[in-house]
Image 1 (tube, rainbow, N blue to C red):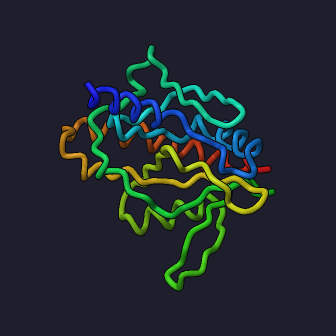
Image 2: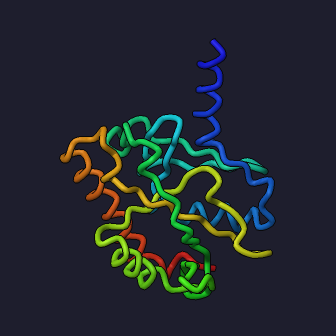
Length: 188
């Protein structure tokens, strides 16, 4: 019985994100809301990716509610090993959305979203399928929120058929393209 209770708590925690540690709570909420239609959410406990969800806020937390009516926007059986941290941080800038990335010399640099995503695609030699999960909304600096991006590596999702991998990749790539097109409108 304790195992079931722990699983339920883990599932709830995946979709209920605390903002208590953030200094830029209100800006963080707005930034997440601006990007929520473009960035899927991953739930490790359920092993699911949600590309369509509603975002609700309390004073100190974010609640992600997947759309239960749209089963085509939920991708199941995604093992946690297929979600890799990238170190890429999206943050609002006066020019839209910037991407802070760490260079080989350990310095960090902010690039426009389109430029950064092109570099990542070259490095990956294929599609970049970003997802966010609990803990990825955080402070970039004193007054600026950011979202850490994870990469969905479908090659590691060995429980999925080739068709399922192609379907997920196509759907998420479409979201990335939409984000790139809208990025200049989503800043501060």
